[in-house]
Every structure is written in structure tokens, then in C-alpha cells.
Image 1 (tube, rainbow, N blue to C red):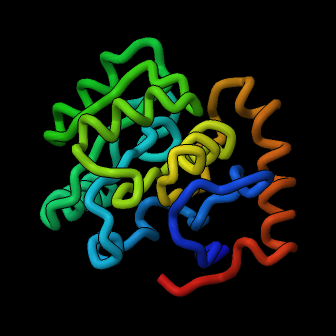
Image 2: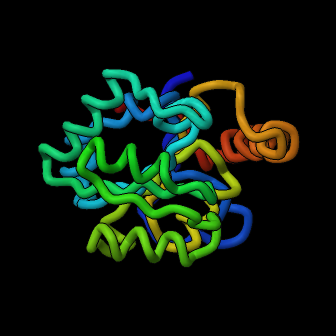
Length: 188
């Protein structure tokens, strides 16, 4: 599957479109850091599990580490945003890359996103959220008026609730958004 793009600018979405990402890609590596910079984005909020690393792991692929470094070279500020109650792992990962981290975010609650925006010093209009879950990362980001990019999960191993409760309706909604023309193939 290629990149799917909603062709819409950031801003709070209404109704069922609150669950629709602005863009859907295979991996963070399908997101060009320079494109984000040129579109005026100065902050990136990143989910950790199954977006950057497999669930509950800390080993990050060299290509993903290079992608993070490219964002930083361009001057884009980065904040990890995790729902984990155990924040040590996200803090260690953030420290390793010299970026910010907000733990126990309770996504899709706005409070975690607000703390991430404060840590970045950016406004919603100049910030992107990148994550693998529609009902936490994308829904929360859309509610806050961020530009939302959904990635395919890195690995099928994940929290059981996510795998059996969240993923089936996600697949259905992604199909619906494609069918209705809300997500279209796009060039990267």
C-alpha cells in the first residue's frame, strides 16, 4: 500500500472524521522530514509503541534513528507521547535522542497532548502527531487540531485490548474513509 492522504489541512475535525488521519503510511520512514519542515510544521509528537519500536521494546532500527536525527537537523522539535504508566522506558528513549517525553498521557485525552505541546513550545497548527492507533493517537490529535499521520503497526504483538478490540473497527473505518474519498493515494 502506498501513502494515503486526506488532502486536508490540520484543524479540528467533526463527526466521524475525527477518526480519519490526514495521512496514512506504512512507516515513519515514508514521511519526509523536509516535507514537514516546508509545510511549516515545527513540532512532531510521536507515539512510541508500534510506531517507533515494537511494543514494549527499546531497540530502535538504525533507519528510524536516522529519521529522528534528520527531523532534529531541520530544527523540528520532537516529543514522545506515551500512554504507558511506566514512563521510564519513554524517558530513556527520549534521553537517548535528546528529545522530550510525556508519559501517562491518557490519549486521546487532551491533557497529554497539551503537555506535549507545552514541552515542544509549538501551537497545534504547526504540530504533527504520528502514531499507529486511530482511537488514541489520531482521534486525540484531531480533537486538538493537529495534523495527524497514522502508520501501520510495526509488529502484530501488542496489548490484547488493542489487538482484539481496537484494530477491527480501525480496519473498517480505514476502508470507509478510502471508499468515501477521505483518504486518497498520494505522492511522498
